[in-house]
Amino acid sequence: QVQLVESGGGSVQPGGSLRLSCAVSGTSINIYFMGWYRQAPGKQRSLVAALTSAGTTNYADSVKGRFTISRDSAKNTLSLQMNNLKPEDTAVYSCNVYGRAIAGPPDNYWGQGTQVTVSS
Image (cartoon, rainbow, N blue to C red; front, side):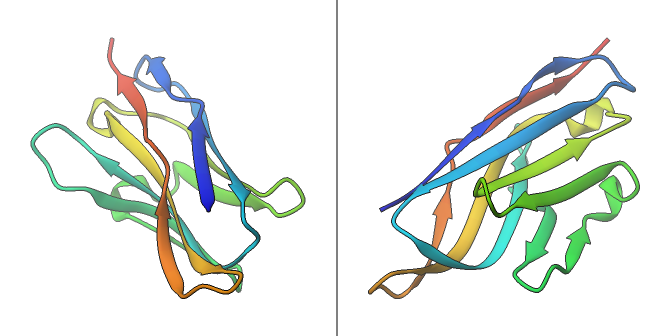
């Protein structure tokens, strides 16, 4: 079993910063892709930032220049640094890993989600 646990969400004023973390634990996994998604009330879940095993990053247009995705392989942690937050960034943020655990097929793994609220 692979477990993903997010932390770092909370409430912040517009222009503020938050750093989300996602700890990956459990069965050893060969990771192909890691990403952060978000879902605001009444909207579909959408990809915010992605990081491939080759180190390529990709960001939604709405967060380019403000958000940075990174990975600490030694700690098996994925992070999302969010700067200059805007009210429209308010959502539940979820960590996603696509990879192959030992003796298993490739699969998607999700964290439980963490709330980010940007409001004055």
